[in-house]
Length: 498
Image (cartoon, rainbow, N blue to C red; front, side, top):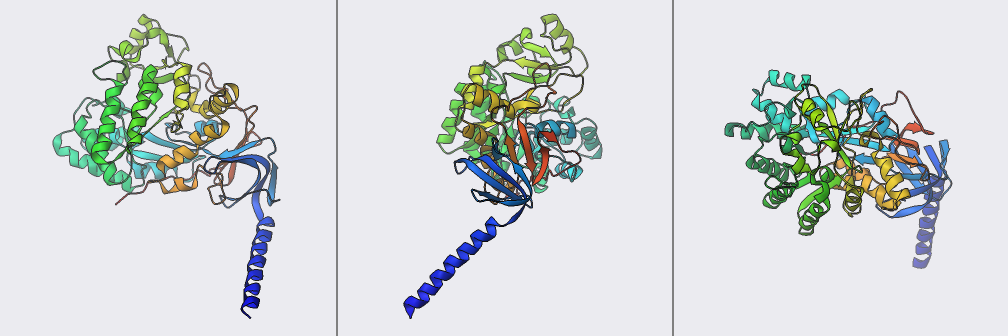
């Protein structure tokens, strides 16, 4: 009797299992991709699979035959999680279209941040092609307080978002305003900001005590400081080494978290050695991380504090290494002096890193790839990193030079940024993976043709090779062409840790 009951139960389990398999195999998905080389950097999957998408989620990654309302032949294409750009200053739909064709499905403004946070998110609701999110801006919050902390100060910021990088940057925040600064940053986090964005180099008035207080706040709220560090310099005092040591010390003191933005830009030729400091801190349990974009030149305004007297020795370059974004020409000393003393917003590209430096950074197992994208302006040179960074990794550093394996490269652009954030950004637990249950942010590209087409002299050239890009289950690139009038981008929020 017992054996008979067990036998019946066993049969029931088998029948239920077969029923579940049959249901999955016969499921009607919204979209099915057939025969893609599926790469999931978390599980190590690198096999031919069929992929079913339903309701904004990946519903199946399977060898089974799947049925969909639309079926796409993806044979010969690589399927990967959509790329998560932790460092993007781009805000326009035009730029988002270029970024989508570079495989970007989530772009985050974490270095500069925004202020006020709630208004920024509200303005974007229902209007974004790509998923979006931001930190709360330390620089803008302190500018707001230095200018009265009232509606007039907010109007100043809204009329000129870059004013906090030019006006009152050397002013120290009065001691009686420190508590209010922390309160403003907390208000931003309660509104959903992804941590705190802080740029001491652009606001030298931020003293060591103030930055320590901000890091302590991040520790208390179980989030992170995303920082454009205090100095970018090869010489002391005021070296990049000192800046990294300051942030490592702040993490050690507070138990907090710091992400150092674009190490390649700040460390220049010393970047590989500086990376050893960050590795050492991580090996000893400190929550410190960094990133790089895959280009040898940086970009900035000629009137930035970066070019204050002594800049040649600090950066290890001269005027001949600067390229005007207005004319495309390398500068002479006289041209640099004339531009520097002008009043316009002349931008320059600074060529200060070798290929070997970028390669050394990319090969680090923990390195995250970003773009540091800005907004494209017709008729003006822009940095090609805005529209071609991720394709450049796949084309140049994977296929052409073999610096990275395809799986490692994909991980640095999807899984690793998701893992960097997921402890305090709940949505990231469902991104950066090509697995059933993950968000349907998926890219399909041809590994033989994917490459950046943007150059320093012509940045407005979209990347090649991306055939399908899907964001929250909606195709934004279909058969290599942009889909017009779709806005599937969703907000990405941080938690407010208690």
